[in-house]
Picture (cartoon, one colour):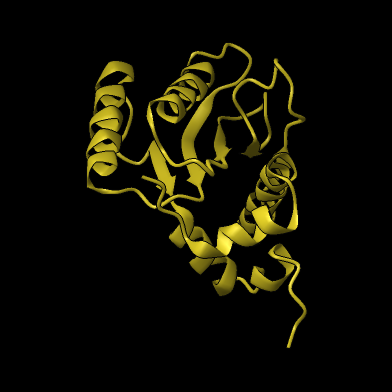
Length: 164
């Protein structure tokens, strides 16, 4: 079942899915720049060696960084998407190139009951396995991201809407 905030469909309608995915990462980067105006925030060029990072906050290599993983799942959150999430997290947490302070998953989707149960259970298992704080793994779903884009006056820019 694919549940997402309908606003994200604007990107899919305006661009092809791959371009919409890149646009989503850019939107997340802009949002985090607005939320943390005094911090270094960068995107990482997509490649095999991106270390599981889409966006990071902080001085990489000098201090523990906050990692932002952006997943544009137009087909919902099924087993294949969960596998991508697990793999991305494992790449980040086991990296020897940088230290991680927190890991945030940004998705366009809204989790149903079963998906919320999966998320909580997965997060809890990782917390125990890697001895992480309660705040280490975070989720920003499609609704929360839309609310924050509106809160920081980025909504129209993000969706390339004309200011009316």
